[in-house]
Length: 172
Length: 177
Image (tube, rainbow over all chains, first blue to last red; front, side):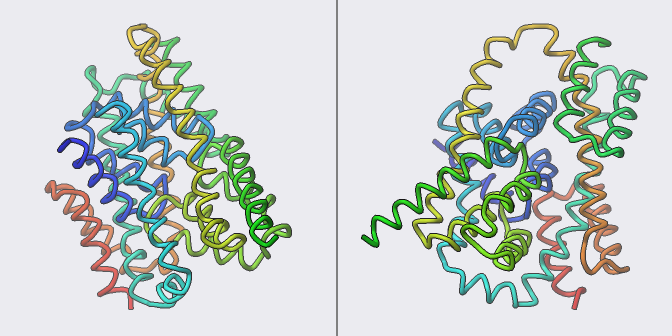
């Protein structure tokens, strides 16, 4: 039970401190990898949720919840993720209008953005270095460069991820 | 009669969100699809733009917030519920199907190679999202860079990341007047 409560609080926290699905990946990594799941599991979760149809933030949350506590875990993660925006909506659009005009809310979010970006750089670094048992091999670098090039030329991320996975099956 | 109309409208909303969530794989991708489905039929363009603005501002998953706002604009509180269920259902079912499949192929060696190949690509995707976020920050000036630097140092000395983010928000309050 306390594991489920922890999970619920984790997702509540992450969703109160980030404003979008992609931005929440950094914080989720820091909060879950090492304690709740391994780096490989996290990569699996991120990739599948971006490749499959449906909101990636919800899928990532459910995947993490499931790997911690099966179906109840997935449900708790889902509830923690949908609660903040839903409660805000039910409080009514009038409050939203006021918040929109309140400078402090805008400034708080604007201050979050550079911190979220830096956090994501840390996560990318950890993914590339700390978690690979064999260090940074040329195969990993090759896949990273190919991924960067294809994203640069606006190939959709789900396709890039799928291709990287297939390349991994072939060369590792 | 009025009640019946509302019910019909909710069903329409529910179906619309089901469709959008089945056809798009991520939050940002769903915005374009949602625009095509909703503007002109259930809401005006300026309402939609406002909804997108709100969903970037408030905490939580942006795709979900956008869905809730569109639901509210066209069907009130019942619209919110219809949008919520329509957005939750597809990813939930897809995830449950996926984990049961993964459980079965967990031991296969090719899956390990697959994930090893995914890792660098995921890292690159994360880096590019970070760059886009940083560049798109509206009031980007030296103060943003100060916040970025302070966050960098804080993370380097292993300050817990939620604290770093919260601190950055507070700094934003103080610095970005």
